[in-house]
Image (cartoon, rainbow, N blue to C red):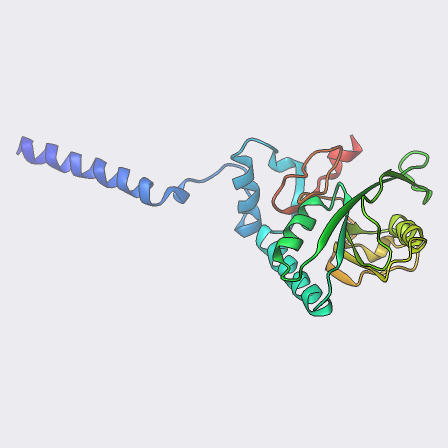
Amino acid sequence: MKNIRIIALILAVLMVITTFAVFPSCTVKPGGGSGEKGAEIDNYQEGGAYMNADFSRILLTEAEIAGKVREIAGRIDRDYENRQPLMVGILKGSFIFMADLVRAMKTPCAVDFMAVSSYGKGSVSTGAVRILKDLDTSIEGKDVILVEDILDSGLTLSYIIDLMARSKPSSVRICTLLDKPERRKVPISADYPGFGIPDEFVVGYGLDYAEKYRNLPYIAVLSPHIYNS
């Protein structure tokens, strides 16, 4: 009888170990969100990078972004068949979107980058733009696609387009992952828009706050206490 009890105890322990080995997701994470978007916060927290409290919510998941990038790449492929566009990424925010976009495109393309900075008193933009890095190649006679992370006021892109016009490109079009039409101050729109989003502070997938959060694989709404403190 004693041997039977020992065998039964051993079998019970083995069953528990097997259950946690096969179904590790059964462990409940404290403070996590619910559903796919909440799970993305939890998974990212496991790397120890950022706390859940930094974000109000996940706006766009990694899967949603990937799907939109493929969609935009397909539209560019159709429009630029038998042509080779020059993809110009506006640094720094567009670098991840730009990399994923050109890899999703089947159309041959060239790549260049510009870095610009808007400045003014406090956080209010005057529309003045300082060029930190200009293009390395001539755009004369070329089909240019400006790749932005987010289009909001439109002041910076309007300045860049006016500046580029002096170099006589064949065409200039705008591609943006995110669009905030509520913030527009000049009449400008994207030829290849991604997601229309509300007027909220978003980070991740290249977008930052004080040089943080760029490496998030998704796009999240930053909690106001982060940038109001």
